[in-house]
Image (cartoon, rainbow, N blue to C red; front, top):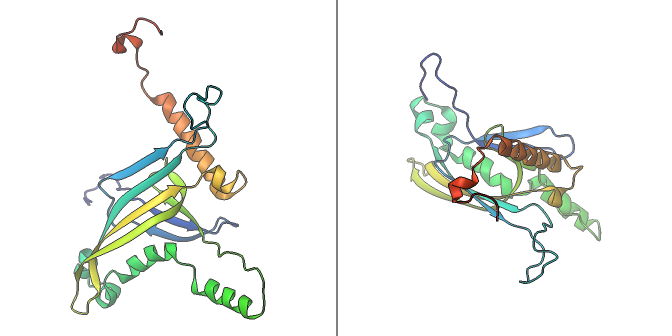
Length: 217
């Protein structure tokens, strides 16, 4: 990013963890470098998988299942040039740990469940994770759940701390079908959907003549 006066500020993508109840931001993970590509897949949720089901052919049962995949790079070079003490001691372990904790329950939750089991609790509720939001500009703030996650450590310092890595992240957008309309994540999904509807209004309207038609069939 250039430091010339008046140069545009580079907006970065990242992940924000919220307390599901209060909505308080618990942690913000900013991607060091924006990925060059972002792959999105939308799986239509229709009714009537059988061919010839005329009554249901044009109906939806839910929003599509939207999956997102990206590869992020983490590199300690900039921090090492500024003699950052944490990077000198641990490399990029802290950044990797912040991402890895997205798929771990906390140690406190594990101890709490163990304590309940030892006191004879018959039914132990599954451990709830913070609400994760994938932020990719103001138009895309998406409640999501990680579906796959892999790390390739590519370089190490003299103490075998990783100093360069690629992180592959797969996630699925959570909709009102997953969270409900009253959940904070459900509200954020509805905002995302309404923003899409507004963007459609700004898209150019094509002419039938461009398709070789004079009128609709």
